[in-house]
Length: 408
Image 1: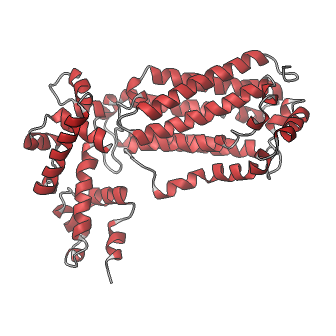
Image 2: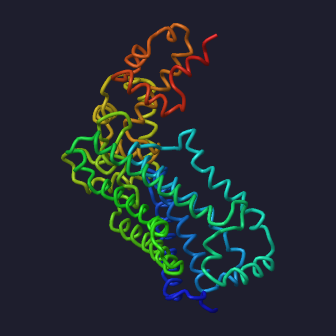
Image 3: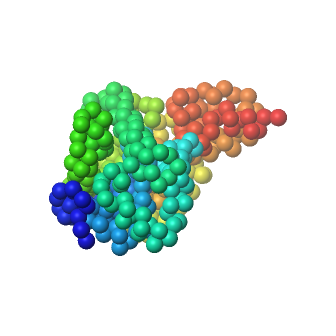
């Protein structure tokens, strides 16, 4: 295959694209398949990195004209540039706020991805012969690839829209981390320095992805050299993210969970520290995660029976230490079972029982006459605010909206 006209270092750039894509896909698989504690967050990160990795593969095929062997690959990953930025933003938010699923309105973030996919569908459904002929006329210069005019929008609109969308999400990521830094005590920040450092670096790397487009807006840069810079940035982004994650197995394999509970100034301990109570060697964490399936189910049945019969969650400030003592299960085993069997941290586990208790009680007319403060205290919450946030997080609606469903 011939090199793209006027594209210096085409072979090296193609090699960088394929290598970075391979590494990115490996990390994406590790994030999606081997995470044990915070699947939602890591799957979002996996999807973001996978999107960029697939885009890098097609870029490599374009650079060395190998796209002519697989013409159906052309533009097949274009819409993924609308998917990766919101996934990256939602990943950062889910880590900082300990979210276990998307919020109802979060699906709106994926509208640009869906619209662009639909826009390209007529072209994507064209025959291989049509695309091959189209590519032979297109690959006479880098401009034909960049302007992206196969859809409904005019040429160059999508590159600008992708830049605006991507940089906007980077700004939102930075804002989340900044707000977190303002609301959390310094001691807590230090205890989570590795995780926070990764989130800051990840956000910075996402921002650098859009630097080539920003430069093109203010400097008279040659399009070929600008494309080389953009490709080098993409390959470097994937390789750096993969390297940083490989050197942080706590993040890659999900051993470090989210440090922050939304709406409070309290920092949750990472899962590995929840598993290991103070004074117990960290080696016990590995033993907790190596419990046999039978033992985990036995502990799970014990915990559920105790929660339903004794309702300890109605006590304020009920702790994992209390639950371990009352069920005669080692504390690190209690935490491991809650994290592995329910995909929850201890506070969400307890709050889920409290919310279910409230939902049942609110079906009774006399309970619907109580104030939210009274309901919260009766269910074991420390105040109205924590009750409101827990109820909304776990049900998707506010307590008032739930009450309205049973009010004639």
